[in-house]
Length: 314
Image (cartoon, rainbow, N blue to C red):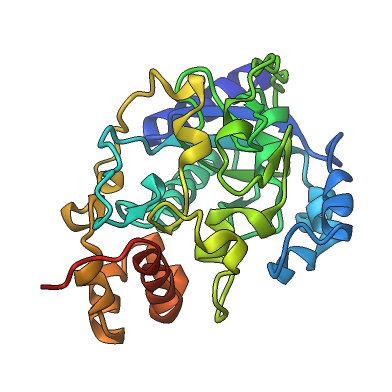
């Protein structure tokens, strides 16, 4: 089979599987991969020490999957159009965590796609990944032409803005490769200007100042006072830099029903959340990305924003 036909069939399989975009890049070391070393050396990853692990594989995907020839990257739109509440008695959960956890959804689709790839060529071997393997997915998505890395450091696509999950498959076959696209952020600094904790500089994120990091990855400690008064009711994640991005102005609702929000997660009442115990937290959030924070840290977030704005309990 000609390489062009094989590439076209692989992309069609991915789109038919339910993904919204697919691109392909040659396996190897990425042009900007070394930036990760600088970021880690400056401690900007905070207490996400797992990012220091398998650094050689993060820098060169061929060390993750020996024999790698191509990296196939997908984007899965998760946008739902519900607005975040401005009511001070309501907590804010990042849009990506309103529905079901994306890891299982994407992995199942990728496994199904890889099985179909092998029907095209039985010699094809591959490894799937979505957020849990030591892979710099955003850089690979740029290299595969899905979009560009915005000044808020998230991938931006023309069609879906930055409301996309990423994942992919590294395979042992050469394919036809896509070309990186232009950076369309221009002179815009909306995301940087809107960040309440000054976590952003152009194309740079200091996770230690980011509300998403503080509410999800910063475990078992009080949120530093420097940032706790700037949470603006965010109790899991933060969408400020994405909500303000002009490229997200025409976002399309996702076709994946499992990403649509559970009713109780769109505008959760803080008083009801603070009453959750470990069992009720598990029952409510077991299938949600919120579960990652664990009940103790989630309740810490809830109590912190409630202290910022006293809520009547009458």
